Image (cartoon, rainbow, N blue to C red; front, side, top):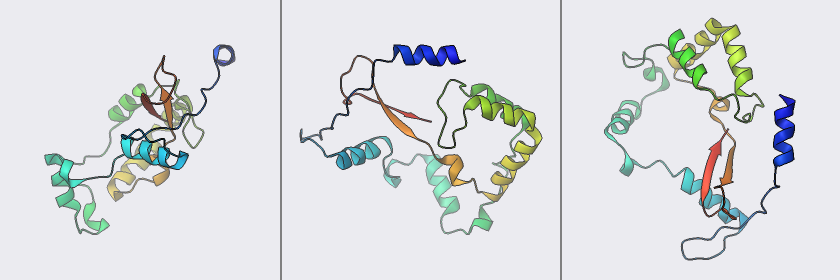
Length: 159
C-alpha cells in the first residue's frame, strides 16, 4: 500500500495556484463570490419548476405531513442483504475518505463483519424516515480537467 502512496507523492506536480473565477459578464469574482458560484452551479436550489413526475408525487405525498405519517409504504420495502452486498461491490476502495476519515475499504470490512447489524440499522433508518445528517455530508473538491491551467473547466468530486 505505501509504495502506491509514495509513487503518487513522487509524481505529484504540485498544486495549481488558486484562480479566481469570472462570472458570465467576465467580472473577476472574490473568493466568497467564487464559492457561491460553484455552489449554485453544482448544487442549484431545489425548484418545483424542474420537477419530474416522480418529484411531484413525492412532494404531494410529504407536503404538510408529520414525520409519523412518512413511514414505510409498499413502495419502500426494507433493504435486503443482496442489495447491501451489491452496494458494497460498487464502492471504490481507491477513493479518498469522507469527512469522517473512513475509506471505502474500512467501511466494507466493518459492514461485512457485522452485515446483519448494519442491515438492521439501515432498515430502522428507512422505517423511521430518518438518516443521520452526517451520513449525507461530503467534502466536495473541485479538480481542474487534465491539461487545463485554471478552474474554468470544472469537475466536482465528492468524497
